[in-house]
Amino acid sequence: MSTLPISLLPPITMSGGTTQSASLPGNFGALVGQAITSLQTGQANANQTIQEAMAGHVSVTQAMVAMTMAQSQLDVAVSVQNQAISAYQSIMNMPLG
Image 1 (tube, rainbow, N blue to C red):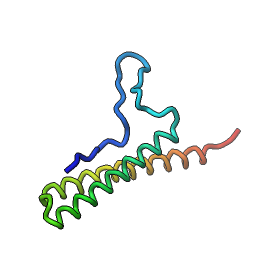
Image 2: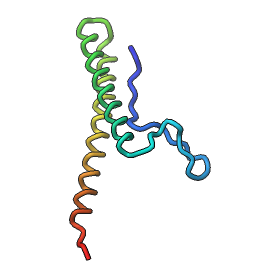
Image 3: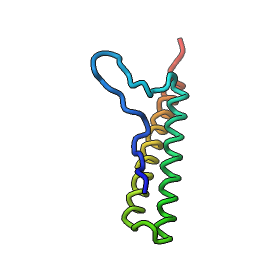
Image 4: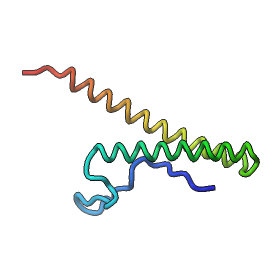
């Protein structure tokens, strides 16, 4: 069974100043795209592990771990989406002038 990544974002090192990991994309759109791709991969891996458990190739425990990891990834994505919508609504409700 392959390992399933939990994190949606690549790690950032905080070693003095504004140094970022070389794997971070240059713009926000690319970062969101990478996070969505990671989420889709995690969901697909969980589905594959569940199917393998139903066929008897992996244990039920491994399938439950894969499902839990996929659910955690989805929870983080939904939380980020809700925060983005909230920020957008706050900006739209700001008075002009």
